[in-house]
Image (cartoon, rainbow, N blue to C red; front, side, top):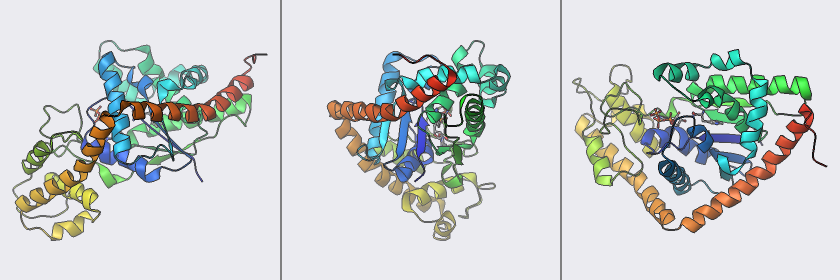
Amino acid sequence: MARVLSCIQPTGGVHLGNLLGALQPWVDVQSADSFHGIVDLHALTVPQDPAELREATLELVRILLAIGLDPDFCTLFVQSHVSEHAELAWLMQCTAGYGELGRMTQFKDKSAKSESFSAALFTYPALMAADILLYDADQVPVGEDQRQHLELTRDLAIRFNSRYGEDTFVVPEPVIGTVAARVMDLQNPTNKMSKSADGDNGLIFVLDDLKRVEKKLKRAVTDNEATVRFAPDTQPGVANLLSILSVATGEGPDKLAERYDQYGQLKVDTAEAVVAMLEPIQTRYRELEADPGYVRDVLDAGAEKARAVASVTLARAKENIGLLPRA
Ligand code: ATP
Ligand code: LTN
């Protein structure tokens, strides 16, 4: 069985795009040999409020548990609980070239947008490579925007192996998500649903009050064509509603489109389906919120399981690169 590793940053305010595009697929691929990390060290590459970061980390853990990630089956862990990540990241920084890190488009975009940024924004892909290589991961599900970082991880693994020993790292394969779930903003349906949007009328948060969820969907922007077709290029608003309804019901968007001749009913049904999807998640979330001891136990056990694998890989890499083992 292929070993899968997936990671997400705890940035707070998990929305329907994050849920359907990133988190739900974790539940679908989980296995006794899958590792799922909440990468809080990555979040520190930009300034964070300490209390908000802690809360965002717990929010993500609770949401993952609430949607069905089973910690008795797979391994769910917080990156900073497994110190091997930071340590292998150093070896990766020593393996990566300055030029190659400078060519990362995410770094170029983010650094161009701000006057001052941390050194870690530049070395970020070395930490990401460490996340992946520590677990001997065969497959790493990521969005298209992470393809270049995955390529770099492969290059670093191959370079390290050829310099210091072919047995050191497994060279991972990216698994790039399909179009299945690119959720668009409800008010500006040509933009993806994103926390960075102006205002939150176009966004549905997983923890939003359900009455608000209903309202936001009923006010979603459509168009003047007055026909229901799944045409993302010409009718992005309607297509977005059909996609969301499709994920919630499991029926294809084209098939669903045939059933409607009015936007109003499509909105009503999509709202109902999304509320039905979020309601049990929110109920389970509240239960988990009321049981912080359980959540801590899950994370402690996850850190132990993760460390059992990560420490072996790190020891191998340190030995192969020539660091003197302790007596
Ligand atoms: P930002 O405000 O920086 O855009 P975000 O919350 O919208 O943040 P990210 O933190 O960039 O999203 O992404 C977290 C994960 O959620 C990634 O795997 C990303 O591919 C996925 N994701 C984010 N937005 C969407 C969306 N609208 N549709 C599908 N997947 C999404
Ligand atoms: N860079 C990724 C998050 C991330 C990741 C990883 C993804 C950090 N480490 C390891 C997969 C594997 C992002 O911003 N989406």
